[in-house]
Image (tube, rainbow, N blue to C red; front, side):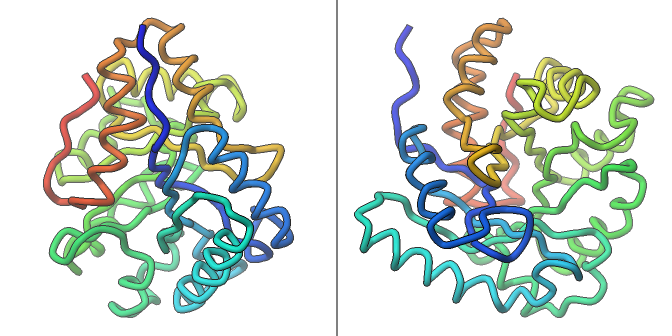
Length: 253
């Protein structure tokens, strides 16, 4: 079977040094970038945690992305960075429209935000997601498989968000069991039921390294169709960056 070609886009990637639980130093960021390139990725959306305890001001993101991009050029590492952020639901109401736009991705009229699924359950994100949509942003929901009870009631809350135009991002590391059995089972359930749109790495460090190629292997070994894997890992991430949301992406299945 022909394997997926290099040149992937990874929409959830903690590339910036010293701002959250991602790389500590610039050298760590550069090594993480080298691993991403080796893994077949050529574009990443830099998504530091937008939390009061991490990057509370989204205005910090673009200068830091520009600094790292300059270093990547100097080091000859062929990786392109886009500014983004993994937005905590508790921050939504305190950020201005301009601040949200600093970490939004995609073209004018279809820009989206990566909204972190709360680990204690999806209930808390419903009102905040509605607020973001009312303010003109599409939503990509980060790692919903790691939220407690995501499969409850046939994924009732998640399906409601999908019906409102939300896009789901499942982490490759979850599929491989890095976040425990429950998250792994939920990740596979979302893929198998066609409720996953995008697979991303959620890379943080050398211990949580870029793993899209390993995710590809895992999906194919688990019986996923090649066309499904290609859409989840190659096609839909590029479409999100180029065309944005709310233009609805096809589901994986």
